[in-house]
Length: 116
Length: 113
Image (cartoon, rainbow over all chains, first blue to last red; front, side, top):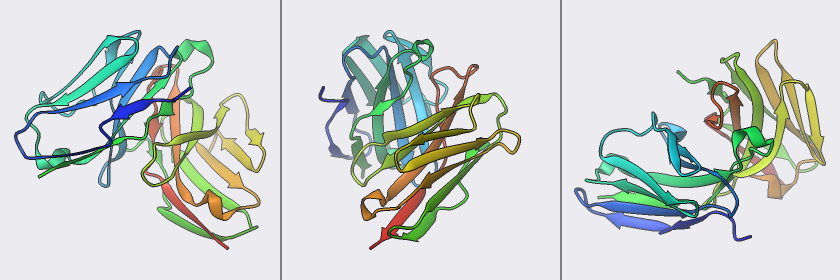
């Protein structure tokens, strides 16, 4: 298995531009998570999906952030418009459902975003 | 409110010695705890976990201890190897939080040859 795949690995954009981060979870995993890592706040959960349905988006910082999961093998995290304070590493992770007994989350390599 | 705390941002250990990484939590509803290891430019990778029904779980050189009364867990690595140098994150979840993991700030472990 290729593991969780994220693209792009690096993104540099200018303030005000739209940014779209992509994630392909591990095949068979029903839960998908988006995290953000910053020096100030560490690793924080933004949103997670179970069976393509958003379950908890309380970590999404504001309306500029949105996430979708149109099918079991693809998710996007969009920032529109982007701001310099959005600069961080964004991780996607996937796992089997919580009740399955195999809840370990597997992380992708991350997307390093820099907003100028 | 930081529900999971790793008070030591860094730890330096000599190769072959024991590394002990600590983690404290405040939420008494947490009942499942994990340690992740992260190398630069990579995502965190799962290392070891423990359920609250246990107080110890061992996997090779890695052992996690849980003290529920103190709301404290620790990761022991013995013997430490230079390849263990990484950032270690403690994470916790509970029945009420479901799939949601709460992470600590991380501890940078450096194992010196």
